[in-house]
Image 1 (cartoon, helix red, strand yellow):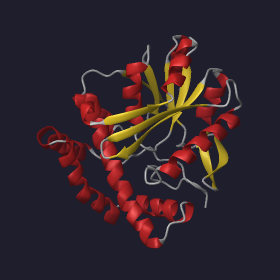
Image 2 (spheres, one colour; image 1 turned 135 degrees about the vertical axis):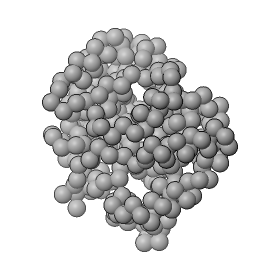
Image 3 (tube, one colour; image 1 turned 90 degrees about the vertical axis):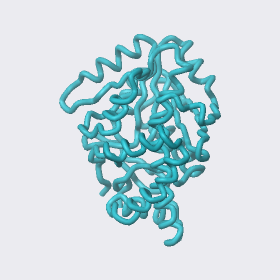
Image 4 (tube, helix red, strand yellow; image 1 turned 90 degrees about the horizontal axis):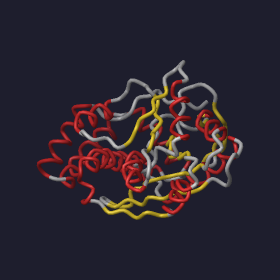
Amino acid sequence: MAEQWTGESKGNMLGFKIFEFTIKNFGIRTAYSVLFFVALYYFLFSFQSSKQLYFYFRSIRKLSFIKSLRSIYLNYFVFGQTLIDRYAIPMGMQNQFSFNFFQNKIIKKTQENGKGGVMISAHIGNFEITGHFLNKSLKNPMNMVTLDTGDDVLEAFLDDEVSAKKIKLIKIKKGSIGHMIEISAAIRKNEMVCFTGDRHMGGKTYRANFLGKPAQFPAGVFDIASKLKVPVLFVFAMKDSATHYEFSCHEASGVGLKPEEILKDYINIVEKKLNDYPSQWFNYYQFWEK
C-alpha cells in the first residue's frame, strides 16, 4: 500500500534563520556550502525519508546500491539549495540567478482568453518560485492552492521576512468548501489558480501508473480542473545548475477533459521532467504502492 502524505515538510525555523544569516552576510554560494554538512546529517539520521528515497532510486530508477546512496545525498543537497533559493529570490536576489522560459506564450494565450486557467505543478524542481516569476508576466494575481496542515514553518518564515507578497494563497481546510468559493471567484476574475497534483492526505484518489509502478494521486485537483472547463497548464521550474533554472509550461490535450484524462497528461509531463532531472524528486514518503 502507498502511504498518504502527513502534511509535514523538511526544515525548521532555526535552520531557516541560520541560512538567512549566512545568505545576508556571506552570499548564496556560501550558504550552499553549509549544505554539505546539512545534507550529510539528513543522509545519516533521517531514516524514514532516506528509506523512501532509496526505494525511488533503487526500485523506480533502477540504480545500483552505491549510486542509489550517492543519489540520496545529492537529493538532500539539491533540496536544500531550492529552499535557499525559495527564500533568496523573493528577497530581491533574483539577479544572482539565470532563467530560461519555455512556452511562455501558452500563458499569454490563456490570459487573452479572458476565462482564467488552472496550473498544476509537482514537488519536483522548485515549484514555489514558479509563481514568483510567473507573476511578472501575468496581468492578474496568481493564486496558489495549499493544504492547511498546520506545518507552515517556511511560510511563517517568509511572512516574517518578506513584506510584499505578490501571490495569493488559497488554503484548503478539512470540512470546509471555502476554498472552492475562492477558486471560482479567482477564475471569474481571469486569474490563474495553481495546484500541485502529487500529494494526497487521504480522501478520494485516482490510481495510475507512474514511472512504471502504481501510485495514488489526489482526485480533488483533477476533478476541479475538469469542472472549471478552463485551460489546464502544467508548469515546472527545474534547477539546471547551482544558479540556473529551466521554466516550462505545457498544455493539457484539451479543455473540459475528464479528470482521468488530465491526470494522464500530467503524469506524462512529470515523468519526462524526472527523466531529465532524476535527483529532483522531493516527496519524502512512500509514494508508490509496494
